[in-house]
Image (tube, rainbow, N blue to C red):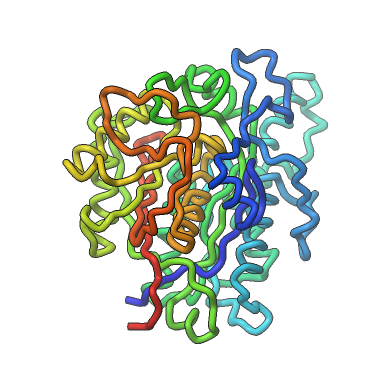
Length: 408
């Protein structure tokens, strides 16, 4: 098995685009949650979201036209461009058959479904362009990224809802460690949409004013959008070309609750099994984990179940492992969420700082855990765990380690 490292980071997020802007805003505790601008929310009881403002796809595209793709594909391609530029990988002299694409998403390109629905409601369904249906497909996101950069290795789309980013990174990791390819652009992307917004609003899951993960008075999640992409490479290739290495991917774990269509297992069974699988695959134990990037949506159910799973698996050590949720700042970016969080994990290992959970005012008396309230912290973590839990009971955890140099 080959060792796999992260050599490039690309993020398009509600708090900033590009590695430097994103990380600075994250450590400052900057919030990207604000009144929704992309559509009218007057029919909903809630009105806030986490949108990427002033995004210009043409800044990042060289081969494809922005009009030829949906917004999620635009976000993913932009993040991929940033990750490749950051990595210094020269594709012009690379074997493109040895570079793959693995991208997670929740909704694909829902704006095309919205367009069709609007035309149908207006009695103008015959005006619907025929091309909107193939453009809706989730697979179009990975295809657009691969086409833009002429990548000819495996092209995968992972649609496991809000755990999809982590799942896609795990699949990319497998492709490299088994020797099928040398590099993979891996991550996740989703665009802001009326469809998930309506669904979460009807579930009563959207917070009215702000996102407060793990706070006693938390009132819900906040839908968002964005893309996170990391370039994974085999360690020997990265070292040979003198690449900057942010972190090493140790392993990952997947599980399914098999419990309920939307609700997590009340005792965190699936979350525990995903973490256990990731630790086993990585060859580390709970005593090695220095930081956990939480799923941390801010809903009463998720925060309770996630904290329960943490306590059951880590025991007494649970209170001594920092665990924060960046969704308090960037919102819940759906299929991009754990991919953006993976970028944060690798930057935490590289810089020695961990991001906070903002809006944390009153601790929940049921859980005495360290949620890194309101202020970033310098802890110099060596091994971190990135957790993601999704509808349908899909769970995915990825373990990263600080890279200290050398090839074994």
